[in-house]
Length: 116
Length: 162
Image (cartoon, rainbow over all chains, first blue to last red; front, top):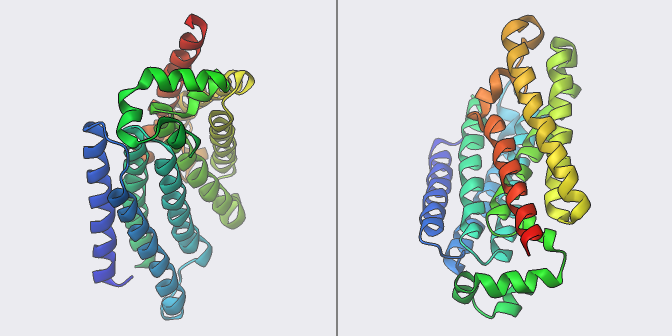
């Protein structure tokens, strides 16, 4: 994967996870800004999907089922978590986002491993 | 969305837990299974259902012959996570029971598979979700059913006392 873009993905999901944990501790529901950050991460993951499709020919020996399985699962996790956080008006809305953010960090790490 | 209108504002929802609980009682009281902390729990179950299914599906399609025992167990684990997630989302009396059953099966499964992966490592050449007590997933598979059972117990007790 493109190193710079991978770092951006890591940074945004880390910010989302940490911010969500702070909001959970502060006992606040997910506000517009936090949901906006979730939308940004979702958009970046979709960009990653498009980039991967575009540059997949240049790689060798990567199983597309494995790689795109991870990308699409990550997109689904963030999209669903966003809806759930929007619907939940307690501190556990950000709680959902924190869980999703941490999951996506692990998934990006796996994606990077698979790509190499 | 419905709650948003009922409570009229984000801060009020956090402040008036009592009112919220009263509003919930008009629906199935077991819908408490997936609200508040339960929503975070349901989300984690959903993540596990999704990722375990994706992984088990991949393992079965691409390399089932490498470790049939481990991969069959991966499929079973995925199905149980899906059942638990759906039960938490439905949130009625029956699904509360089934969810308790799913959590128990899950916990017993993690323990048995965890022990087997140490006593019969040849059958677990490739990791499944539950091998080594879920160490590949930060031991979350070991803790999750306990948290789930505790939460389901709290929901059940709250309904009985009301």
